[in-house]
Image 1 (tube, one colour):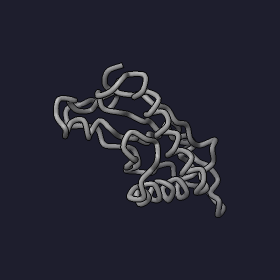
Image 2: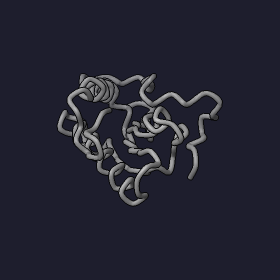
Image 3: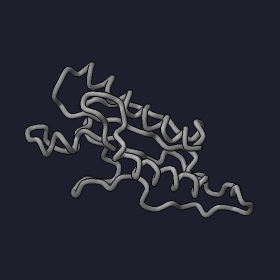
Length: 142
């Protein structure tokens, strides 16, 4: 997702990704809790980056809510620069660290479908892929 520089304003180019997330969440009501996590690169003051990451995660949550996803299915949190996925020593690494991620926190085993019946318990490909060489439970520096 793309934001205006140093702001929490979503750019229009982000709509396709956000609309795809809305579609996945609409089709998979068994995804009962998704956490939206904001991250920044290591440049700038720690407190500012933490606040910016929180505001950006909240902006994504609000977009999803405005497009019909229930607030009870979404939570947002910002981590500033505390969880990098690349080195902050290069422009490319900093760009990778400036991100918003959506993670499945809770998936119900079976939940009534809005159209009746039951919903299958899996939605593949929604959470971000892990970088090569990292175990699935490694969330980076804490």
